[in-house]
Image 1: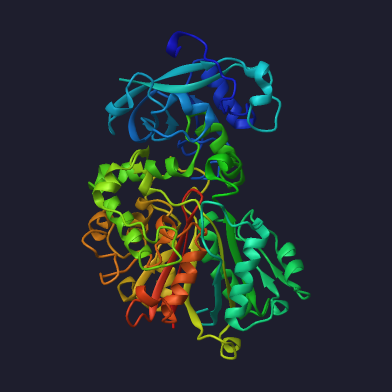
Image 2: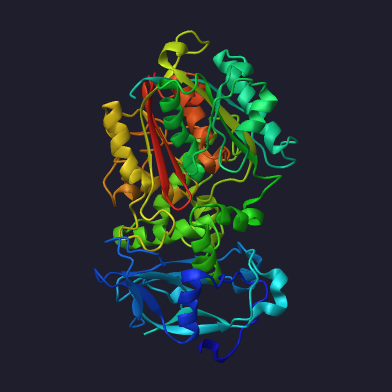
Length: 158
Length: 386
């Protein structure tokens, strides 16, 4: 796990562990970056969708990504736009283009923002966030959080 | 639908920061609506169609306040900042097909004294079509607000085409220059140099403070009716010659698009120009939705004013300033007049085509373009003529 331990998650906007979005994050919690892949036309997709936008097929499976990709674009946020990220400024959010062709919004945890470069090779890692049940009032969204650990896919320079 | 409908009245409130408008969200928009109706020479009660901006009011509420006893057309286009121009198309279709006679389109907010962008960003993000995707895949990594969404596209454009900070600055400077000719602009009397632009603090790279639109209190409105009815009204009609709106694909997710520069306007612009029977080069001016500087560069490219990748050079050397090849945002735009959600661009286009733009008038303006941009790249465009 990145950073070798648990992060305090209270107040951070977290994904709701629901539906296909929840399934995506449960794969991350199991240490796998997986995307949907159409069983009929073979196309990979992210974000999760119920049917294949290319061929309308309902048949798909979660398949594990190689975890390798390149930095497609990024922005370095210097002025806080959300209280949960104020102390992190300046921080970079990064779009990674995976070998499978899909793109994923994430971050590169071992690279100072000023040294980021489009085209840089990256590999996936996982960042575990503390189960936020104790801070449920601070969570975003309307659903009860449950007790699940939430793990975000992040990246390191290859 | 070409020339079947006209904009017959426009109006706006004053624009301010500081103490704020002193009016409610509803009252502010009513003030602009009444100004637009007075401009057209219409009584408020004659309005039978209302198209409010997304999440900022209801047709029922406006009709109740305005005494519209015969409201029969009420709808909202859910395209964020692309809504006002997209609504011109829906209103034109409504009046030319008989669904309504007079459609009122109000827009405005207390963007300074009321709902500051930073405070409502999550609520706002949750309300757009991609809200659940943003919540589950963007917010956890700190991608929380529109300047960041679009900065991702701007950074990629700089990488692929060599677009520079100075070119983004040229957009900011042109808008600021135009605001010096517009007494209503919030930035009137506050000129800006390239040095000041480059020295402004970075917000989210590559966007500096002066790449970002203003937060202001203000509202604007317009009224649309048929060309036949327009002839009997107070002001010279402005014809809706071509109009279109479209979505990027997919519209609910901004990072995974095969072609990240292809937005709603890419699809909409050729249709609007075709409907009007003109080319981009025929336009005497363009009022381009300028939430951030790069979006002007990108929309000029995707609307066909220049080729993709050439937008950076296109905006330099005064080409988008008054007196240049294509004056853009002659009122100062969202960057230097006020953030009226794109309706200010419609009002300015109409004033230019009626020859009422005083010190910032484009000489002999007869054909103008106005665009809208919203959410994750929804696009709208109207070709207007006098």
